[in-house]
Length: 90
Image (cartoon, rainbow, N blue to C red; front, side, top):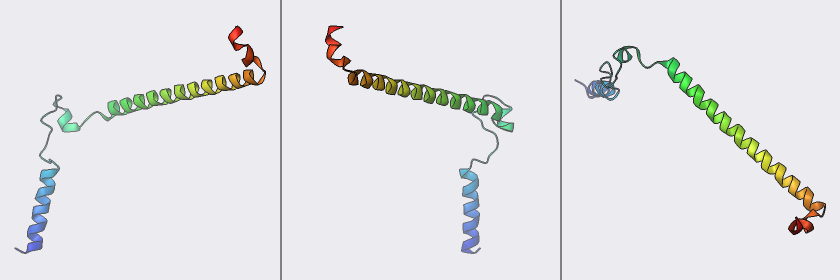
């Protein structure tokens, strides 16, 4: 056998072994899952839900940042009007 042919056979065997192309998943709790794979609809719902949570957190972060900017602007306006001098009397 030539060296290239032997090398090709060994690479093919290694590919099958490394990809675990031996059939069903023995660690699966659902016997049908090893045959048809995971439920892609359920995985899609979980991804959509997690994306919605991330978007909600970003919206809250943006809202807090805008409230902070508004508070800074109000504070600056009060200081510009000279009300900062009477601050200790309130």
